[in-house]
Length: 513
Image (cartoon, rainbow, N blue to C red; front, side, top):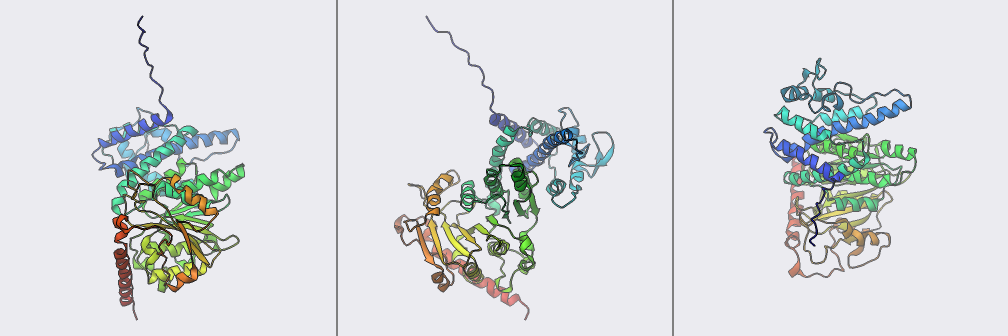
């Protein structure tokens, strides 16, 4: 007897699938709008809409808690500018009325009165003590512009985002992962403009070996979209056991600076989604502060960063640094800032910094900075990353410098991170994985000379004009199998050195006698 066909029932969507579908639908709607030119326009649009929904959901929770405690609650955003007032109803204001309410400095509000438009209102918010959430909102929206032409499509996007419940722990956790994938898309697009974002595996490795502890202050002076700060927050969150621990983590642990508007806004949202309630991220160039003005109050315990390199800073910024260490190269200026920002007492601060290969061998100003690093700080470890770690942004070889204020340096350990067996380099489709750092993590606590690791006395390095570009003496090399990037490394080194010399000559000629 033939078996009857069993009808398969539709399985309910998982949280991740549902949220992914909602966000994809919102982005598909935005692709129809003529005002948005590409993914880099659509991502910030999604970000500020999600930001307002997230904030309103969080404030509902806090308002309920305040009622239970019979405490007065003052919202960050007042009526009629809260999400619930203008966005929550699917058949609420739409079309030109919605667009004008959001865009115009003065507009008709959802309650029928006249007043500031939404973005103008949000920009005008002021907190009471400089790190209030109102200041965060005002700072975020200082760089926001709504570029959607169609108020009807905008309503459709808002309705999609309205279906996300930011008062659900599971949804926030899932959306955090989804948001990271959106940031990665932005990073892939941003690589063409010279912004190189640190792969998640490298960030995790750096945080793991730095091991920031609850009660310590963590800074990224060029935080971009917040990858290092999010990972440090997660690492320290595992150490929280009490309400006091949680308050310490929330209020006095994570700090950052970001000069560009879009990464700054994305960083705020990224941190909020991962549980940091009032991110203390300063919008502005960290290099704009004179080094001599940095005092003990400004210093921190841990610095984790991938500062921009290859850029040029104007003379006004260069003037904030010692005369014999002034340069237009951003990476070298950030190195000096990081050294100055590390706390000396009561517990010596420590730093992990991504640098391009040129910093290791460059002379001139760079050599003087490295001399200070070796004589006043403990440069204990340099991890040399393999080719393609930063693909597709750049093929320039990169290194991780680890140093602290316990110096001066006695000897420098080098660790050459190997490529996986059978691979010649990393690519965009085959990026570095955190698990591949397992060997280095195991070696970190019990150091010894191996095929990947060697150490050099600091005295020897100082005698060679602080050249840190020291090849692995234990490696088996076969020039016929070296990738092209390494075969031309000598040429690149000479070009970098020549550029440094020419810059010094240019600076000397430009100085007034």
